[in-house]
Length: 171
Image (cartoon, rainbow, N blue to C red):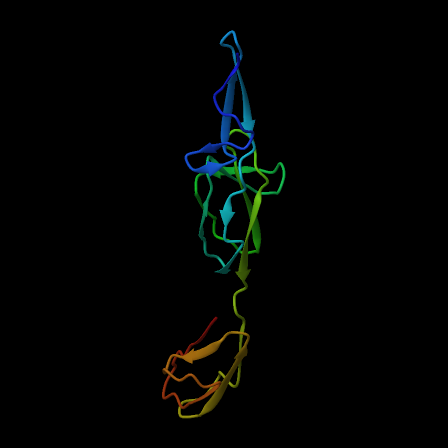
């Protein structure tokens, strides 16, 4: 009589249903094997990143996890439970699949890249010694800071000689 090594199409391997192979032997001792399609990997679907930075994306799955550039086909990027992006300048979506014995549906992971903030300076920047000027800043950053420590949108200066001032923004 045939012997079922595992009697169900939905198998349990290491506590995870639907992952792995099952085998069946016939009365002559010959085995047939089949692959159960693995479950989709679990990943945080969205990440936020500053322009020009990289990110390590972590996911979990039950077998061999593979990373790709598209939902089907695409470029293979590597395997493992984590993937480190290159320095990104545009929003990018990566796809991960469990490839235990067959390929699961790919799970999308989108990394949204915040653009660099912009900044504009206005005011007279060419002065004679002892003259005063007010410089103003505008842009789309979350705030500004002058080299003097001020966080105002405008700053007055009375330089006695050639002087460099700077203002930065952040997001």
